[in-house]
Image 1 (cartoon, rainbow, N blue to C red):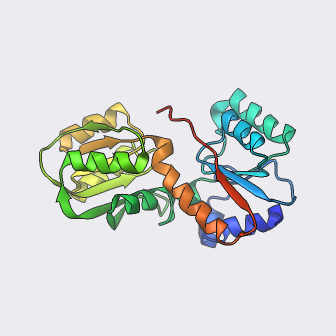
Image 2 (cartoon, rainbow, N blue to C red):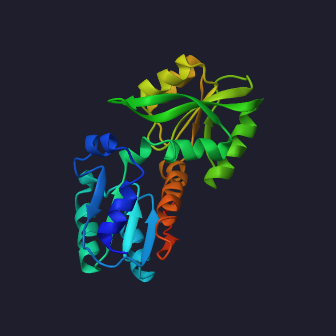
Length: 251
């Protein structure tokens, strides 16, 4: 399958209005676009030199990631783009369009936790990146911590601010440290809030409002959404091999 065919498939799961809104060259698309035969795709959340080296060693034709290489990473960005060119590697990324979809990082994370979505939170220009959902039966904070750690496959940090059982949770995969998203969760009577980043103002606010704050990693709260996306693409590219490239746990 050619690169252009892959592009059509990779974008086919998104409403046209979503792609049009985020079509600024930074939220989805290609780095080092070459229209060639794609036989092997490696996927990850981030694009780093380590990911590129893994792809090179595995003879990958295309790297599929959630994040673009960040514009403000200066030398890192230039080095990654240079390595893509030198190794004839195509890079395709899908960031905010994927974040806004029910099958994206937050939706996939919620499903893996056994949470039923009931409301949307964390909005931007009419697009939503988070959910409020409920467990079938209330659980303890310790049980919730164990569930999150099992899904993410790493330890998480907890800021405990009440002793109630937990029925309703707010989830924003990735960077959900903004106060607007926390305020949404509080307004919708969440017992806990789960995300992949923190900042002082978010922790102070969650303490004041009595909202338990659960911190996973940005990368691994989003990996499940990438896997869901990859499986959707894979179903339409049955002759293409897909492998996972391993993101480093650094958060």
